[in-house]
Amino acid sequence: MIAAVVIPAFDLRAALRLRPELETAPAALAPLPGTEAFVGSVTAAAAARGVRPGMRLGEALATCPQLVLVEQDPATVEQSWEEILRRLEELRPDVIAAFPGVLCRIARVIAGSRPTTLRPRFFVTGGEVLTPLMRQQITEAFGVPVVEHYGTHEFGTVAWQCTKMGGLHVSDDGVIVEVLKDGRPAHRGEAGEVVATRLHGFAMPFIRYRLGDLVTQGDPSCPCGAPFSTIFTVQGRMLDYFPLPDGRVLHPYSLVMVILDHGKRWIGQYQLTQERRDRVVLRVVPQVTPSNGDIASFEGAAREHLGPGIEFQVTLVPDIPPEANGKFRVSRSLVESDYDGIDWDHRRAMDLPPQPRSAPRP
Ligand SMILES: [Zn+2]
Image 1 (spheres, protein in one colour):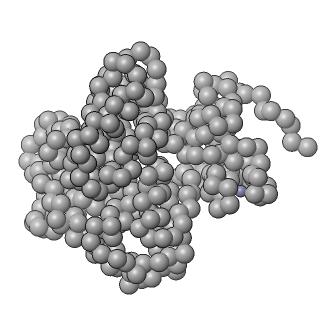
Image 2 (image 1 turned 60 degrees about the vertical axis):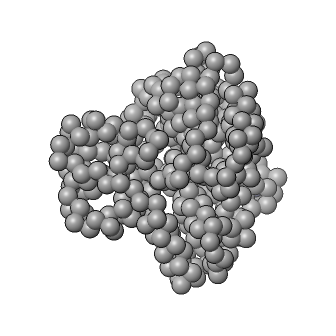
Image 3 (image 1 turned 90 degrees about the vertical axis):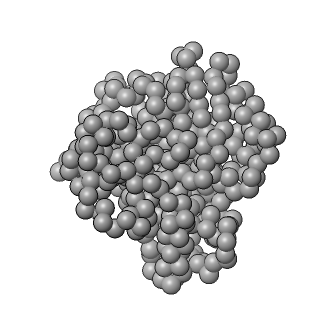
């Protein structure tokens, strides 16, 4: 049996267990203390009055003056995750497919309180970035491997993890994947934007379509012998780029090594936010309480990575709730960048000149 774990508006559902009368009222999750003033998930009644998840608090209240703000309740959230774990243990699935952030959250229940009998053959993750720290946490908690799947609504499966070599096999049979860096093909190991062409979409063609994802260019064929080209890593969304004051653009994935080198022992879950062009905040749910020295050493390494003139601060928080769609967002930028001008959801046709393809296929 394959179990798929998808829980939209999980944190709001948990909070409403204590106040069920609000389920049909215009209600939204209040921002957590110490975070920006954005509302979280919203009820259907709030959505019908124009309130969107992630809206600034002031704007949400101006849009819907009757909006009730529901405080998040960490104890109910924890209890709900335990119930999900118990339910999965009863189902005993062979394979579990989920957003990696959801699996990490279940892994935290196991790490925090109790052993588990849940032993699927493997996990399949997709839908959001699987960071190396997430992979490690899931593998350690359950003792089973994680297989990464990279797919999109428009193309279905774009690539899937090679279990021998670790990179991802591209679905060359169904899609042409180009990885472009500044408009030219990225070199091996270089990160670039995915532009894809669907080969069998006859009703709705997608030709050199910008998916808005950032991946690392791999090899033309996989060393495992499978007849597929590869990409090495899926790093995240182009929207998550951090535009810095000196004109550099940094993808937060590049801070991964700092997190692995300096924070692996104490970081349970994290979210990087660029609040201003010159200020980045890392919110951390600690798995053990770090010393002041741990935090100072981490902040020092991150500042060195970010370069001069960028403030960097670590803030410890009790929880980082998922977005309204059930995904955990590892990073976000509140700064406008060139990529904001592209409406990724509605108007993403390729506007770059065609690239010469390296060699014609025989
Ligand atoms: Zn392979």
